[in-house]
Image 1 (cartoon, rainbow, N blue to C red):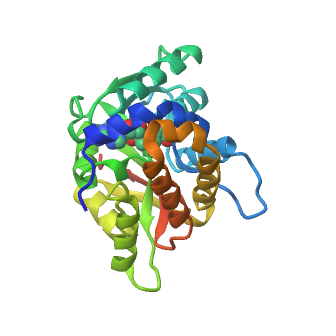
Image 2: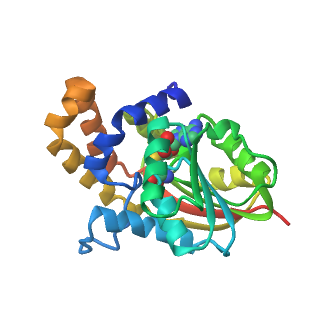
Image 3: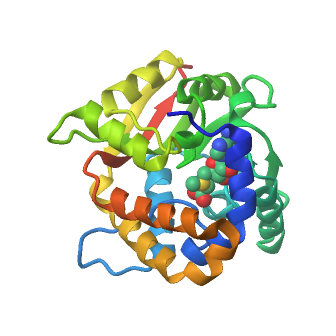
Length: 274
Ligand SMILES: C[S@@+](CC[C@H](N)C(=O)[O-])C[C@H]1O[C@@H](n2cnc3c(N)ncnc32)[C@H](O)[C@@H]1O
């Protein structure tokens, strides 16, 4: 199935950024719930996922972090609030970049946070210019994860770190390939997944050394259920933007993903050799 191009992904986010606020809030990534009795809000659960990923990294004061696929800047604002670091965020959506900038100004962080429109497939930064590359739920959109990881290695200084939150293929009863095909089909190519071993091999091939890998599928899975419920409640606002057919397809997708055993989620970190 043909994956949407970065421009198509950007246009989609440009069109839906305000609707996404109503659906999920400022974080455009999954939440982390401890167990079935955990009733924290979507906002708190999503912040928790940001914190879990950050907790797998060493972050030093003065570090320069590149946020690949920064959304409207919420994870960057949270990271910059918790740590005295500088962050450059890139997104393929111009509307997100504008909003991320305005939100950084409102948070009083514009001296350390900046955002720009750029394609992570072709990063406009010099070699060895960052201490950390951070990609929270953005690599799955990109046409070639391996290429983006090589770009990340290029812009990292020796000893620099990478933090990734991404969908990850899980073994299912009918095998890896059948699971991957179902996910690909249900998402119409928007969400491609690979298994853990393939992911770690890709990280190594990009010139990085895997450090941590945590399967958080069980904790993030409620996100699909909640997104489906919330999306269903937004029918009146959403249909004028995306039409009835697209609305029903998207809702069906959330429901299919919430029941898809092959669709997992992992947090990964790696480092560039010194
Ligand atoms: C699911 S959102 C996650 C946003 C953010 N990381 C967060 O957690 O709130 C995916 C992000 O990846 C960005 N993205 C997708 N493809 C991209 C590309 N080729 N280059 C740069 N950003 C891209 C989107 O514009 C969007 O900001």
